[in-house]
Image (cartoon, rainbow, N blue to C red; front, side, top):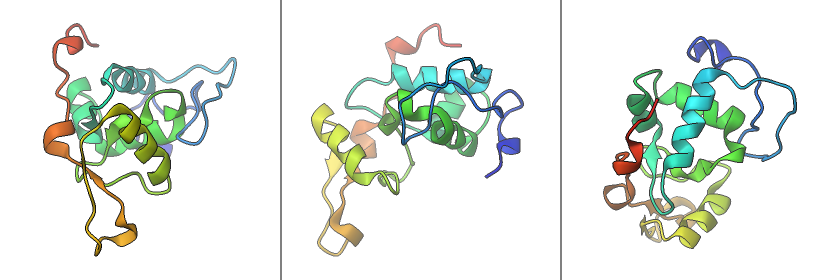
Amino acid sequence: MSEESLPEDAGAQGARAGYDSTREEPGEALPAYAERVLDVAELIPAGRVMTYGDVAEWLEEGGPRQVGRVMALYGGAVPWWRVVRADGALLPGHEQRALGHYRAEGTPLKEASRAAEGHLPRLDMRRARWDGGERAEGHT
C-alpha cells in the first residue's frame, strides 16, 4: 500500500517507528493523522483491543487500511498489539510477540483447534473488544 492512500497529513515518515522497532527518529515530525491514531492505541486498556476499523470510526477519519498503514509505519512505540484485525487473527509475522503481550495482559483468547494452521489462538473479539468507554471522553 502506498502512503498516498493515507489521509492527506499521514504520508511523511515520522517520529515513531513501525511494529518492528521502538526507536524514535529525532527531528522528524509525525503526521497529524498518525499522531491521532497512535494516541488512540495508547488509550486502549491492557487486556482489551480495538480493530483498525474501530479506530478509524472513533477518529471519524480514514478507514481500516489507513489505520493499519499508520500502525505499520509508526506503531512500534505504542501498544500495537491492541489494534487488531476484525476477525481476531494475530498479526502475521508478529504472532508470537503479540501472543506474549496478550497472555501477559490477560486478553481473552480463543484457543486454536488442532486443525488450525500453526495452532495459534485468535482473539476472543466478543470479550476483548473495547468501545472507548469512559477514557474516550474528550478524544480528538
